[in-house]
Image 1 (cartoon, rainbow, N blue to C red):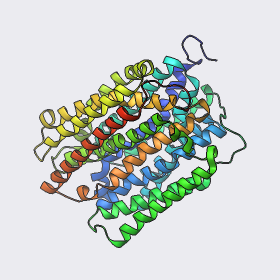
Image 2 (cartoon, rainbow, N blue to C red; image 1 turned 180 degrees about the horizontal axis):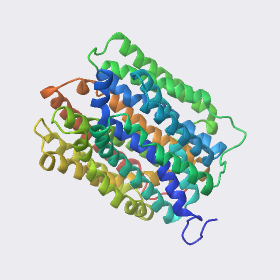
Image 3 (tube, one colour; image 1 turned 90 degrees about the vertical axis):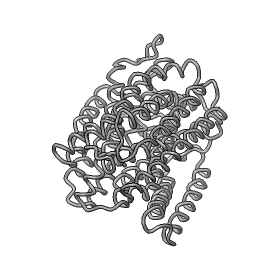
Image 4 (spheres, rainbow, N blue to C red; image 1 turned 45 degrees about the vertical axis):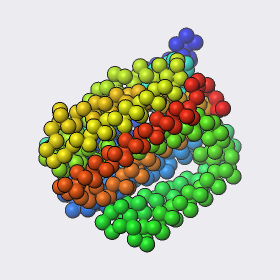
Length: 463
């Protein structure tokens, strides 16, 4: 039962805790593995392309199936899908920890991606459908802050585990929060199916999206690697683009039953939020891969030290995101979503100072601090704005789409890093600086998309 004054349901704190524990699996895993890349690469004698696939084997099904996961929750019940996705993620994490070869590690990472694609949009949709008014903004802000904190603390814990126990232990840290989320969800979250009960899931759309993203990711990984843009890389990328066109055709034909209802883009604000997400999270994805990798490989940091470099990111997001979620609910998201990415761009510019002799307080900390301030101003307002731009029946689809765009952006960014990950010494630093400059440019474009396309007011409906 919802309180009319506060907009909060009974057991609000426990419902929020459940969604945070579940979604933290995705956020932790999305960052902790980045610190482990050098150790995993050494264990399996993996090259640059293999290192990219350790990340993208997870991001590919996550990005491709998030839309289907959100739509499935709308139709079959969000609590049910949250439990299923969390359980799958836990089993896949155990498989990764026990993987005897790179092939089995990649298979486990792919299964983690499928589990995350199911649990992530449904954890956010549960918040969107059970909280209202200012309580929604505050709860989403806390959810976003907790996810960012988990994502930033993951490398610290993961680096320590790698330095003391070994890289396999980083996958075992997923098991306690997974079990806690499953238990709380079964007790405190009421299962509801919110969408049309007669429409079938968009399996053709899901297959086309997966095929498109897989082909483009494979092509970009090969093209930016040592082999360069061979005919195979070009043809694979083109095939991915053709499949993307087929996906859009199928989605248009299916109308409101599509996994990505194109009617959502009838809202100028939703389109602007999607573009902003693509640019901002693509830049963030490159940051999370490259900064720990360069600090360990080029600057001689330990795994723990490289992970700890991101701690200011966690601290500022934890403090500021809940406040910014409430502010955006009152004032509208346009201003914070315009200013935040500009500050992120300034943070990337400051990271250009990193080299082989990078000192933390002089060369790393200033950029991370400014970048964290900018992200704190953007993360919660962006999430709140996405949920507020559609009606309650489409919150699963909308949150799934936004999360899919964010993960796809990170996957594409990772696929483009082959030349950097395959370099060493001065070439590695030079490639890193080019990447940071491009990330700064992407953030400036993200700010422009918010200023030009996002409305100053939000309503709980599709415009």
